[in-house]
Length: 278
Image 1 (cartoon, rainbow, N blue to C red):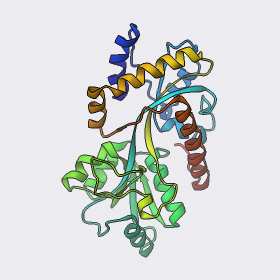
Image 2 (cartoon, rainbow, N blue to C red; image 1 turned 60 degrees about the vertical axis):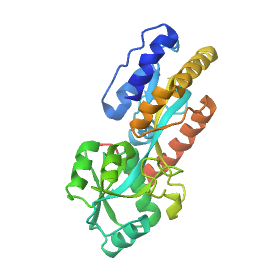
Image 3 (cartoon, helix red, strand yellow; image 1 turned 120 degrees about the vertical axis):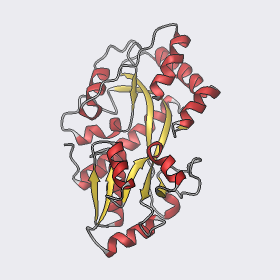
């Protein structure tokens, strides 16, 4: 959705028709592979999300290298994950959840949008660091996972903030923690993971812009200049914020550093938890 918002304005800024080409499949690998093999001439731009950071560790033959196949332009916007529970569950914080789960090992469930998604890996990281026996229940997408926790078929869920924000605001779900460094403006009463003693548990789902390796510095600079100018426009910011995201507009250097750190962090979690793509 953010890609479409920006693409419409990028058409005017560049004087070229910018087409959003959705390529689903392989957990994002089909789209990433096509973009990685495209000519480095500025005419193919990749909009990546969290799967970009983890697929190289999840899939034995991912068609790209997250650190070498692309040049980072900017991370336009990010959204944290949120740990939520059904209101009937008697917990109000992460320490409460851990105590409840440790009292009944293997009986507390947490839904996620799918194996290897950033919320799923965040749940795995919680289990590893807190040494708690919580059963992860990966669904085939955010909608069925959300439906399961709303119906109290599972007690809790790890979900992207835009998916659950309205349900937390309405009281249909209780938010326990957000994985951003700061509290989310849309649910300021929900503490961050770090405020509850979880170190290095921060994560945000990116909406980043990248181009194939070998693209000239002039093209990288032009795209960075145009995209960040579009994201800074008040109406664009309002639309992005309305989706539950925070506008970031990082520099190419900042975004490249973020990618390197996140790839290493989640690769370690994947290996430690023995997670494999289905």
